[in-house]
Length: 346
Image (cartoon, helix red, strand yellow):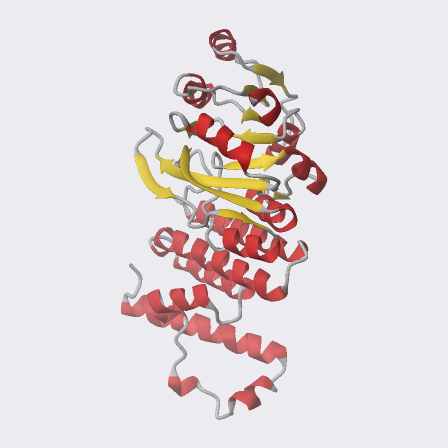
């Protein structure tokens, strides 16, 4: 069954120490081991990999070392000859016994573009952090699948298993800011081919300075926000309704903003204002997640009463667009100036 059903592919690059932990979780904690491929895009030959090759039975593919992250991931999607591919990053690990559970589930789940299971975040030392388990059971397709996955997003390697055929038909992952847009890829598959949720914990996703979710500097925090927003905005290209795309962009935009606020508010205050303005441009309409941010950070949205124009709402709507944009920018600068002087940052 495993030879036709599932292949585990592990892309790696210059991280043999993490790769060893990943391989150990595959070969030493599973009762069933499928076909395993390690795709190595390292910039130089690493002798320790030869030790791993002699220890574990996996197929080794040596890439050029010149591939971008997205090019490498897409190359990995072309390697399996099976129906499903479980692409695990080299710094992630599988839960003990998860392969057998996943294989049994895949054998019964029917056609879909992506299977999304549960995962737990761990730090650099392997300490367990937060856990995410899908709230939904069963298979969904079209806009329902898109929204269910997009609005309850915990998808990240190693908890996504892709249909090999659907992945090839879509054309693989898109590159955004030098990184692979895995969020967009999963939602494209869910919308076009369907998503099946598997509410079981299957793997551990490592968090830390080697990952994109490190917000230790304003530059990293702003880069993460930009990446998140640009990924979400690509959802508008899959063919879904404007309202569905707006809901996903709203959630992704403001959730990423809340993630980085603690970092930005402790450093350069102007970077927080830039991030806030970026979010407003991406998700300008009042909506659920913008409303949450309004509740948690009211000073960002406050409009002093003495600045209100003596116009009705309908009258303000008649103002030229560039005037309304100027007023919004003036409002933002004033509220940030006031907040700084009142010490409203944490």
